[in-house]
Image (cartoon, rainbow, N blue to C red):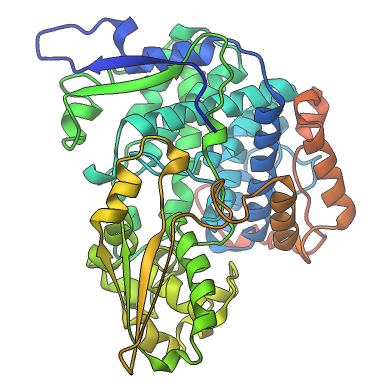
Amino acid sequence: MSFHIMKSFKIKLQKPGTKLEKQNQLAWLIANMAAEDWNLTKEISDMVGNRIIDNAGVAIAALNNKAVKIARAQAMKFENNYGSTLFGLDQSKKYDCQWAAWANAVAVRELDFHDNIMAKETCHPGDCIPTILAVAQQKNCNGEELVKAIATSYETQLRLSLSIALNPNRIDHVGHLGPAITSGLGKLLKLDTETIYQAIQWSAHTSVFTRQGRKGKLSSWKAYAPGLVGKNAIDAIDRAIRGDTSPSPVWEGDYGIVQILLKKISEEIKIQLPETNEPREGILNTFTKEHSAGYHGNSLIDLAFNMRKKIKDTKEIRKINIFTKEYTHIVMGSGSNDKEKYSPEASRETLDHSAMYIFAVALEDGEWHHEKSYAENRKKRKETIDLWNKIETFESDEWNKKYYDVSDPLKKAQGAKVEIILNNNDKITDQLDYANAHPKGKTPFVRENYINKMKKLFKNIVEEKEEERFLNLIDNLSNLNQDEVKRLNVNCKEGFLNLDNNKIKGIY
């Protein structure tokens, strides 16, 4: 997918004692892009539908996980007859949009199994959907307004991710998600540039977290983070509509995000944004996961499936070397120097970002499952632990060039070369540039694949009639009326949800 017509902007940092005019600030440029109208295309609408399907599948499969139950128990304390729906509950039950956004976003993020952007910053742009949908339901928006809002959010997150790297500065990628959701909400509610500008700055200011939530002994923080950012975005928009202002310039100021927190960045930021009236096609440059693991591990899973055909017995393996780009090596690999990534006691949140664990299990099993592949009895098998500890990752100049020297996010190779050394010193090598489901992969995902993925995740949880009702709405997404948008949710079979909220007590 090639980019549509773009205009490039240079964002200069403000020096002490000087003033950066509002019209030259990053927040204003994004706000202006969000406020402009444009003609919706079928390709964009269809892809937004694909991502709503994808979110529903991964969210429903996670509804009885601890983090999701806690978030839902909180949300259910804030009933609102004119509010928004919660995943799994009947559409007649409504809750305040801010809390619905919170609970639904946690459900979507919990399994780490939805879409991605690959650029200077990697992230999950589908995290925007629960918040935008929740506000759309409470504010009586129609399908076209919803689709344009989601596409605008994706556009903002892609453009920020292409322009500003957060990870090298140990800042979490949700730093871009807050402004992205806020721009989408501004578009949804048809707000003017000034109001969106103020809200984006507030949201950017309250969306910066460190990456400690993804390193060492993990909690469910990464599942909660998008929900918290979504709540902040709703709060920012509400406050701006009421006339409040925000810290300015939030990115470029001499005490701003770039100069204080993002030391590993050039003095000048460049960002490309769509021209007026150009379709917001950013979502077409993103892609989803076929396997429930960190995206950089998806190609490793597919590669392991290929290589296991050449191995009679994994006990014959003496060593496995994975050659890949810097990011995979230091975030998911042995270059992280994180012992938890080799520990059978580690949480799922750690293991789905362990290239060593992912490759070992995929090589042994020849399949991947969002629950079974991380089960206690699975990760503690002696033969798995033995194989797991024989795997090491290495940073490769070749793979760095394939990823970092490429500007088009769809052409960035996220894969690896793997060398398996047997006890008799024979070597088996293979490589894969892209995961199979990637737009440039062996079997790129289309609507049918999104639906099949969803159906597997819905199995034994959602009635077939309810599944069909939901998909019929998606098929007509941009033409939905206000009432139909309010029903854009999925209800679980009676008795599936653990709703004993009396056991999850808090302040409310």
